[in-house]
Length: 578
Ligand code: SF4
Image (tube, rainbow, N blue to C red; front, side, top):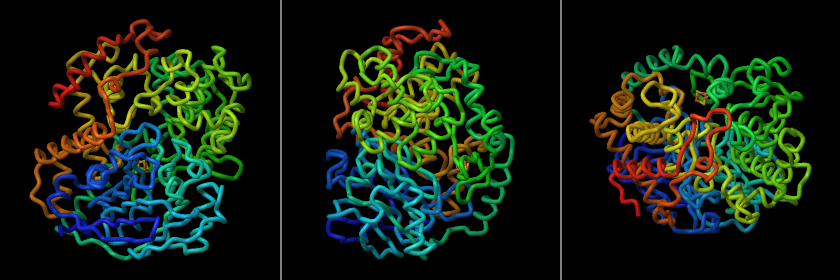
């Protein structure tokens, strides 16, 4: 087994309580690294691509990486990989917390969970020993309450990943939460809920050796120093919330369910304005020197707010009241749902009400109280909440009357806060993304904001840039390092190779890692093909082709142009399009 790894995964069948250690050969580890890459490989090998995501047979994978537990900044992360209950395609959610450190110390490189417990249970993994506890007394508890109660009853040295009421009720975009962070997108919380597992509690003592300890510590020290530089200053000082006004200035802030790219009340959602009413403190994920988190005080609690939550629960729903958006974000965390999919689905429903397609007159754009009410109904799957808990695509299929043309989703995943007509390399990234519309697996908006492309007129030249960002993200998600480090690297692939040399002892090159990144992207596609992917999924909703952005006539995208870009993407990837 190479240093940095335990050389096995723990396969747990929660139907029986049986746990097996399954060896992971070194060539497989070198080819897929860890995190998203390893999780995707295991999903394929466990046959998870072709089974119903909410069935007992569906594997739910928690994958660590060789860098977890090292002093490399931002490396305390794990990936949750499964077939998504929301999209039916691959889902890989990443998050950072002490759960990654404690989970890897259980002596394995991944947990693979299959089966379904008889009753709501807590899965306890204690240094690799596995047992199930009843979780009946936690039924309906929020994620923070579940964590607090379990650390009280099991011991403070446990780290907890849990679902809220939404995960129990199989809301298709339920999250898995831990240390107030979330594996957020794609419904991994519903996957865990379908296994009747309320929470996973882990602690362990088994640490990995590193191949070149002194060199690794020196590299980590130097990377930490660089992480304090200008490339991360925006995130440290203002957090991702600062993006809101920037995107509004560019006319690229999705507003009122993508009916506009500017929001006249955006100023109310800026970090400066939020900070007037709600004192702000900075925080960070475990083992991170950047510290991009900005927590706002609200009713004696602290609420973490990212740009994506502000956009989705604010501008997208036409809500400019910062206090209401903070409350909505807090409520999503308690209930345990993804803020982007929640905001996207609620905004879609608001437009349906506007158009007379849905009889819920209270659910209108601009009403913060309606957003809160909708979140509560979704969490309980009550009334209209039962339909909205299915996500915007399934809701549109049920409502009919052409509403699918403005359901804000790709492959069923709600679109993040980047207007595709104004940011067309990102539009391509959304269309071809293996888990649907996703700014973290593509990152092409960075290209749109550079001088490499005309952001409002993508050409074939945009394709290689979209591929580059996707490849780089695949490697970062497999190592696993925070995306906010990306501007710190002068040569990411070469520096990643150096990290792996010092940790695993492999004589790995930048070129090999680029191949690895492409292999991981291809493996995700393989999952999708086995899950039933068809070429017509690589597109955007009709809304984006039918008219230019109202605030910017130059921001227009035709179906034909996007189809050309998608075809060129497949050609450059070397993939058939049928
Ligand atoms: S930069 Fe932010 S998201 Fe990334 S690891 Fe640090 S605190 Fe977490």
